[in-house]
Image (cartoon, rainbow, N blue to C red; front, side, top):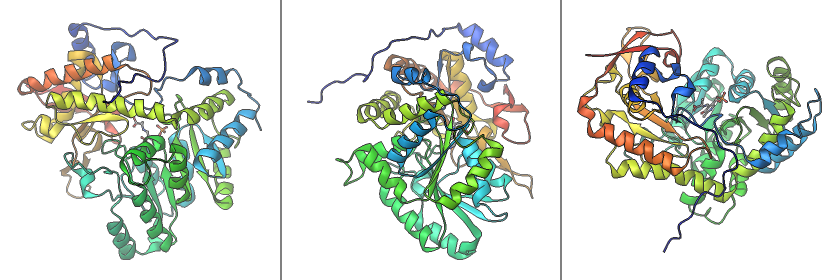
Length: 459
Ligand code: F0G
C-alpha cells in the first residue's frame, strides 16, 4: 500500500489573500476590459497566471539575503552562485542576467546572422521576439504528438529529429544559427524532453557543426520526468541527470524565476571560453558587470540556494505531485485537459471544452473570464488572443493549432485545498458550459496583443 505523504515543509510565514464577491469581480473584470492582465493582484484570490517569479523562498534563502555582498565587482555571492551552477549544470562559464530574456538577448546576439534559422522544439514568446529582432527565423519542430492534447506520449516536448535533419539538409547548415531545446516545453503544457531525444538532437546538430543551447527555465522538472519516465534513470539523482543532459549542449539560458525558486533573475552559461568572452561584452552593455549582471548580491545568494533546493527529490515529488493532483481532480469531473499533465501547470483544452465557440470568438478567453468571475482564480489564455497572427500577404487570420488555458502553479505557494477550489470552480463552469459566450476584441496593440487587449462579451 502506498503511504500518504504531505508537503516536505511546514509554514513559517503566511501572506493573507482576500476573497471577494461575485458582483465585485464582475465589475473589476469589466473595468479591466475582460483581460486578466489588467486586474490588480489584490482583486485575485488564487493567482495561477504564472509560475514565473511567484515562488515562495525557503528560510535558508531568506537567511541568504542577509549575507548579500553588494560590491560592484567580485562580490562573494557571485562566486557562490558560480560554484553552484558549475556543480549542477556542469558549465564552466556563468553570467548572471536580470531575468531570462536578458540572457536570451545575449544568446541571440552572439549566434544569429540575419536570415538564418533557429531550430527548436517550441520557442517561448520572448525568445521568438529576440530571434526576430536579430533578423533570425524561429522554427518549431516539436513531435506531432506534442500538438495533440490527447496523445499520452511521455515526452511531448521532444524534437522531431528526422524533420530537423531534413530541414538542415534542405536549407544548408550555414543557414542554421543554432538549436534551442526548451526544457520543459512551456507552450504545449510543460511537457518534458527525453534524454534520448536530447542526445540525438545534439548528435545531429554536431554532425553539421551547429551549436545547441538549452532554455533551462524548468530544467529540474524536466530531469524529474526523465527520472520517473525514462528507462535507465530511475536510480540516478536529479543532479546526475542534469549534468548528463547539459553535457550534450554548448550552453544554456535560464529564467531563474522558475526553477531557481526566486522572484527575479536569470543566467547565461556556456562551456566555451570564446562564447563567454563575447557574452561578457554584451553583458556589460545590457545587464551589468559580469559578477552581478543586473542582480543584487543578495538575489544571487538566494538563487544559489534555490538551485540547490530545486534538485531535491522530495521537493520535486511534491511539486509535480501537486500539479498532477489538480489535473486528476479536473479529469474526475471530465474537464478536458492536456494529457499527460506537465510540470508547472494544468492546461485546459478550450477546443474540447467549448466546441461551439469558434476560435475567432476566443473560447479560451471565455473560460479564463468565467473562472475569474466564478471563483476569483486568475489563469491565462494561450490560444487565439496570445498566438493568432495575420497572414502578411492575404490579411487572413491564422489560428494556432492549440487553444489552451493555462493554470500555472507557483512553487511552494498554495496548498492542495487551494487546488480543490480551483478544480471545483472550473468543473462547475464545465457543467454549465452551454451558458458561456464568446468575446470580440475592441482594442489590440500591434505586437504581443494579449497583454493589453480589451474585449467585449458577445451577446
Ligand atoms: N523561456 C521560457 C521557457 C519561459 O517560460 C520564459 C518565461 C522565459 C524564457 C523568459 O524568462 O520571464 O525571466 O524573462 N515565462 C513566463 C511564463 C513569463 O509565464 O511562462 P523571463
